[in-house]
Structures are given as C-alpha cells and as structure tokens.
Image (tube, rainbow, N blue to C red; front, side, top):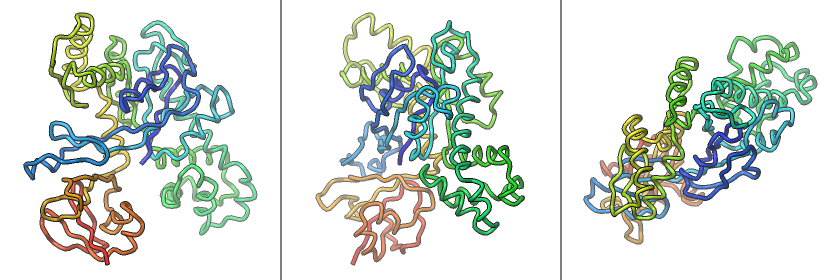
Length: 394
C-alpha cells in the first residue's frame, strides 16, 4: 500500500517523511529541496494480539513496542507543487507523475502561514493557508482533466452510454484509477448527457470527482505549535468542514523519535507523553519540555501517527490481519509468534489474504481457520480487522 506526501514547497513534507520513516531526506528552508521522490517505510499503529497470549510477538516486518504493533506502509515524499504545475510550472509534471500510484495523499500544509504557495518564506501568519488547500486540489484536478482531454473528441465519438466507463478508465489507468471508481463517479447527474456533448467544465467536474475517489486526501496542518498555526487550524476546519484536518508538528515528532532512538527517552509514536531515561543536556531538555507542554498536552500527540492511521483506516478503509501456521499458538512454522501482519481492504476474503501472502498459496487454497474461534472458514469468508488466520493448502 503506497501513500504520497504532497504539498507546496517548504511546507515541511520532508520533515514529516523523516519523522514517519526515520530516514534522512534533505530538509532545507528553501523551495524544491526535494527533487527526486524519497521512498521509505512508515507504519500504522494497532494494539498487538500478543497481549492475549501473554508472550511477546516476533515481527518479521515492522515492530512492536509496549503492546503496540507497527505495520509497514510505503511512503513517498515528492517534489513540491506550485501554482500552474499542471501546465509544467516548477517541477509540476514530475510531481504529478510521482504520485500516480499512490492510493491516498497526505497534504502537509504550513498551517502557520509562514510560507506561500511558491514556498517563499514570509513572516509567521502572513499567508492564508486556505489558499494552499484550494490550489493544491485544483492543480491535481486540472492535471487529471488534461489527461482525459487528450484525444477526447475521438474517444467521445466512439463511446456510448454503455462503454464510456471503460473508455475513461482506460485513459486514466496509468494513475491507478479503477473501473469501479470511474463507474461510481459517472453515476452523477452531470454526466447524463452524451459524452460528445461534455464541456471542459464537465470534464473538470469528472477530474475533481476522480481525484477525490482515487486519491483521497487528509490534511496534516503542520507547524501547529506556532501561535498562528493554532489560530489558523480552527479557521481551516470551519472553511473545509468535509476535510480531515489534523493539527501536526512534524518537527516535534522527529525530535521525539530521534531522542528515543538515542536512548534519551522512551516514546511510542502517537503517544501523549514520553519518559526520560537518563540525564538530558539542558538545551535538549528544554526542547523536549516545550514539545510536552505545547504539543503533546495541547493536542494529545504530534499528529504524525494519527494522520498515518487515519489515512490507512479511514481514507483507504484498510484492516490488519495476522496469518500464522500454528492455529493454537499463533506461530509460524519456525516458532515465531505473530510474525506477519498484512494490510488488506475491509471486506477482503480468506483467499485474498492467501494471495497477499503468495500466489502459490492463493492457488492452492483449500480453507482457513479463524484462530480465535478455531472455526474453519471458506475462501469467500470475509475477514475482520485484527483477525488471526491459518491458511490450509492442498
């Protein structure tokens, strides 16, 4: 599962990426620091079933800390988007191509109003971040419309009411757009006219709806620790009531994870506090106390982990399932407890889990066992979030 980090230049995307992945993408106080996309592994956070067993799990991927299991997802940090990127301005074409296969987008927004849509640094509170929200969505929608418009006259002439879905889906297949997503969008009244009669405005509505369906977005209202950030977040929520907007401090999250990594504190991503483990230098101690008082106590977390979870479980409607070999001890064939965790779309079946593990396992699927109930389940049985499953093959 792939998630893209998007936003205007100099909005904090690379800091968010580094905080989520603990990689070292270049960060700088200037536009277009990120040129080539950075790829890394971030994690969704769920309560680990190992607590039911009374013994620790042994993850092959991801990790577990204090009873919280962290399951990996692919993160992309792409070049910043500037006005008229859809026409090739800035690094627009590269940016837009880089997000093609992302299933959801996290818009890292400078909520403090310290930078404009071009990434130019202004005084704190000097720019209205609502402008950036509107422009970014517009740029992606215009870009999608541009793809649809290519050879549209010929496509529209050939298309009928029965095959227009396939025609549009074919044009947008390179963006990871599915036939089902196109079908749902074309049920709208705006598309009741013959395709050959659709105007540019009609195609823009199509592009906007396709963007919302195929690239759902959550807003990370970054720099929430700044005074103007706190003020603007309330305004943003009022201006965009249908948007998911999460107060965020990527810089604080990165500082906490680095301090944990170096053994100075014990910190579980997404928590509302941390525990000091040793004497901390005074300057760093003041910084950590600032984070505790102004971010963790004020917002309940830095927002980074909350956004990752919201993207996976709310926007993408995913669930976590644990496949095992031993249905009683929840172990692999090598004796590892709960070694694997997979993210699947809600409603996925036992056989779809088998295919997720390996094509041969899916092909040889016979049945599965729900390890909690010890009941045998068939290939079409829908799994539930946090199920533990043993696959039986021939």
